[in-house]
Length: 293
Ligand code: FAD
Image (cartoon, rainbow, N blue to C red; front, side, top):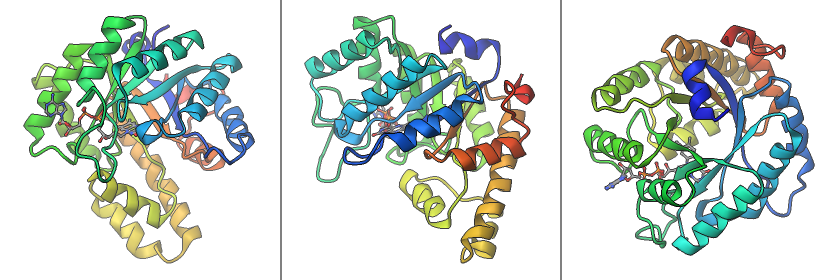
């Protein structure tokens, strides 16, 4: 079943993985995937290197997930550095591999660029192109509950999200947002703006102080008071930080589920043990996501 349809029926569980660098072995990620499959995820998404870097590894991973027969692979895809012809070739390559689910993104503008250096400027153009040329793709789009870092106002960002829906975006996958109350306010605003598609909320496990701060700064997302207390109290003690961070992540998962999300998407960071610990603590078990249904 298409993920966009499944999301209308029940809460989904899914994971994000990223491809290893070209010179690193694939086995650790393949091992991670085996562990993640035990949760019967509804899909696993694989990131796409900025500017198409490491795209080869992205297809290798997506193909591997497809061949496992265990779940649906979703490829992330950006339009940085790409002509329409190149994008079309990649889309055909995915379809030839049986990969028909895609998260269509603009991508971050690399340092030194003043645009995408490609034929598309924004994700909505990519979404329209995919839908016109290859309507068999189920297309997800990104949404940013704290507004995209480049966007001057919430209103403009929401207008652009609406355009992505109108171009054929079938559901939203959200950017990291630790502040679930802010997520709820954003949902209210986007629904008022006529954005009706299902929402898959991304949850980033809180595991190390540096990563939490780096990712928050990179994405322009806030660090709520309870998270900053964990940083203040345990920041110099990695073990205690991780323990408190996992407990914090479990609370986030429950808050998001209570907020009425359509899908729970865990950014696995390719770390299966931490993900297993967190889902276990959240009572989301190997035996078919009991608590989610
Ligand atoms: P857009 O939707 O195009 O928005 C970018 C900015 O332009 C926003 O400020 C928006 O308000 C504005 N805008 C949009 N449309 C218009 C318009 N028509 N006119 C004027 N302004 C407009 N990056 C990667 O490189 N690889 C990945 O695998 C990856 N995975 C991601 C997964 C998720 C779930 C998310 C949320 C993000 C991911 N990213 C990834 C990051 C993403 O590429 C960046 O956030 C990027 O800066 C914006 O991409 P977008 O698709 O949201 O862009």
